[in-house]
Image 1 (cartoon, helix red, strand yellow):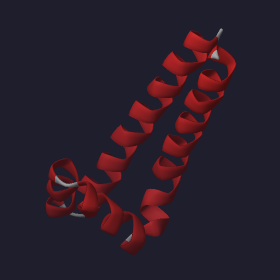
Image 2: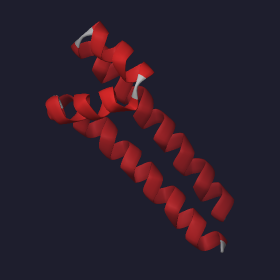
Image 3: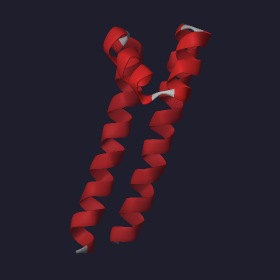
Image 4: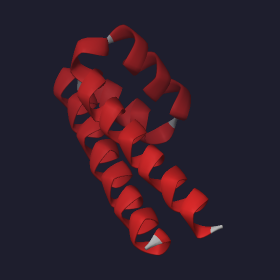
Length: 75
């Protein structure tokens, strides 16, 4: 069960990451490219464009939460 939760968590994180990149590219192509290249750019995009980035960010957090629960269950 733990491995299933961890795999599910990673799938949710990947979906959230893709949605985050879509939001960045929708705002401006330079934001999208910057988010692809640098994690700091993603952080700045999250801060300055909270309304657009909020949902993908929270989806990623949920995915990491699922991974964490899987890790706890696994031992």
